[in-house]
Amino acid sequence: MPELPEVETVKNGIKKFIGNAVIRSVEVRNRQLRAKIPEDFEQAVSGATVCGYRRRGKYIVMDLNNGNSIVCHLGMSGKLKTTDEPPTAPDKHDHLTIQTSAGCLVYNDPRRFGLFFAAPTTELEKLPCFSKLGKDPFAADFDGEYLFSGCRRRHKAVKPVLLDQSFIAGIGNIYASEILFDAGIRPTRRANSLSRKECSRLAASTRKILQTAVDNGGSSIHDYQQPDGRLGYFQYLHRVYDKTGCTCPDCPFAGQKNGGIRKIVQDGRSTYYCPVKQK
Image (cartoon, rainbow, N blue to C red; front, side, top):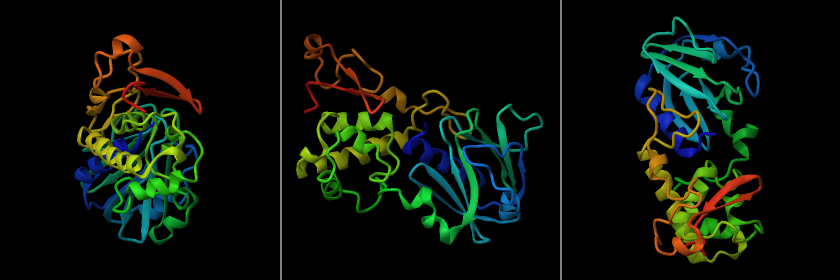
């Protein structure tokens, strides 16, 4: 599933491509996504001008000048593609095309776990998908104190806590492992055992890793690609994710003794870490 850096990259890509364009027409070929694309979607957005772009957790929001906003979640395999003209021969899983005065957006989703709908802009934060989201890692008040206060109430291991979208919005499995490695914190540590100093380090690593991933176009693993079809680059910068048995980049000699990067499973998700560096 695309995580915060990939969603931020897609949002930036479509913003650069269509900017403040007018939505001329909408064609829905298949409404059956995770939730059905509403029957009034076309009417709610057609003729409006895009006036703003936002990311909320793993959701992309396009604000319109008619008081509505388009909300998109890419799900497991969704892609937003940009084209100059509507495709004459749509791909098999192209479910939605939005034609604007600056070009087209095409939503493709083989597994159909994504979401696409419109809602009044002023009502977005009341929707269940937004009202339960936690703090964004790039928010001004996302810091060590926020993490320390929240972790004190959580007895689970810190890795699953980072994936709790009601606590921190946007972090997924790939980046949780990379963040904890950068912070030098073992993923099996109980969240409520972290000190203020460790939480400050964790907050700094969260911003650092996510921003570096955004700067490199995200991680192209499985289905993810940028709107213009390019792949991300950050997968080449992963230090622990999917590197079982590889030598730790921060303690190369110790890897000869401890077997290198280890893989464990937490709450059904793969976790990667260095048993020497991470305490």
